[in-house]
Image 1 (cartoon, rainbow, N blue to C red):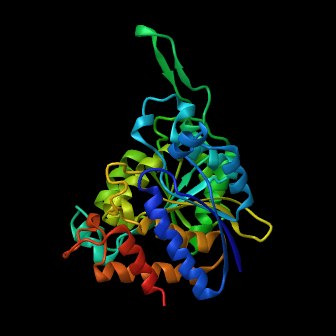
Image 2 (image 1 turned 90 degrees about the vertical axis):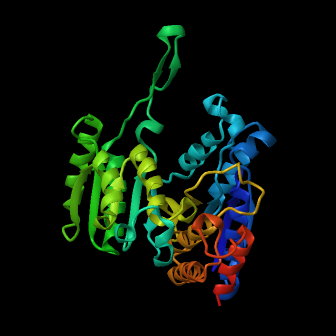
Image 3 (image 1 turned 90 degrees about the horizontal axis):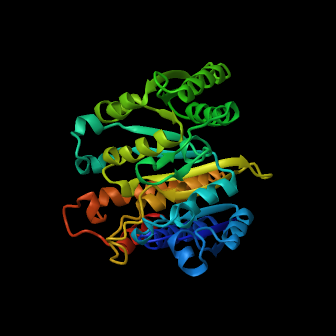
Amino acid sequence: MELNVLVLPGDGIGAEVTAQAVRVLNRVADKYKHTLNLTEGLLGGVAIHKTGQPLPEETERLALAADATLMGAVGLPEFDNAPPDKRPEKGLLGIRKALGVFANLRPVRAHPSLLDSSPLKNHLVQGTDMIIVRELTGGIYYGTPRGISGDGLETRAVNTMTYTRAEIERVTRMAFHLARGRRRKVTSVDKSNVLENSQLWRKVVVETAVEFPDIELDHILVDNCAMQLILNPRRFDIVLTENMFGDILSDEGAVLAGSIGMLPSASIGGRRASGAWTGLYEPVHGSAPDIAGQNKANPLGAIGSVAAMLEYSFGLKEEAAEVNRAVEAVLESGRVTADLKPTGTPATTSQTGEAVCEAIV
């Protein structure tokens, strides 16, 4: 099979972990005799430095032409006080919009070999295995009006949370389809006791669920969900949520996985003519500029994102499973980075990537 992949290394540790993910992707392509065509582009702070824009037109063109896009993190402290349209994160929002991806899938699994890495007690974390399905195109991150106006005591900031029925329906169907391949349970997260936006969310989810009578549906308020993720994470299978709630809750999942460096993600949208999903794949963690260039970042979230790419954008489930098995083997071997609290000397970023490649035999 021909795999046309755009690589956007991004900022900070993004380039380091993405390099290891590409290394693993090359190993898989070699083993299974696929033709891998890689192109590279600019996104985020590095793009601002070189072109003045967080999402250059050339990067958008390359993304639209590729079968899938593999990303590193974006963001640098030097842009913290820049205007919104000149911040690295604007490029991330822009490429999501350009590709039309509307559902962010964030698997959260407690690996047996990492139970001691979580600050929570083992009996709470053990057995955790969920996917957080976060809507990506609506909500407060994209709603208008928005902005800051006035001055002095009259300075006012406005953001608008908005959703349409169509936006809610399509991400709900995605969640229910995923549930059919798992434990057949969807938990929808909202704040319907306070927000009209969430009242529409719950109404549409309930009405759409009628199409999936084989799937159990329950609802939970976002504040209670945040608590239950810590107290009883095994209760969740598919967690369906709007944009901002999903952003917050999925990062909480790092506590369950042992490190935010473990968490991959897949942002997927419409199907291509081949039947594969349009996809944007990236680890959940940020650019961590404080450790950039030190070869100590955990690349397993980025490598897990490659497994997601193989499954969702190329339909290569055997290859995806091979990557996940290799990651599990490396975790059990203890050849991992310092954030996973190894008993011996921590592995470097490149050593961990090498170990995953060696486990793909």
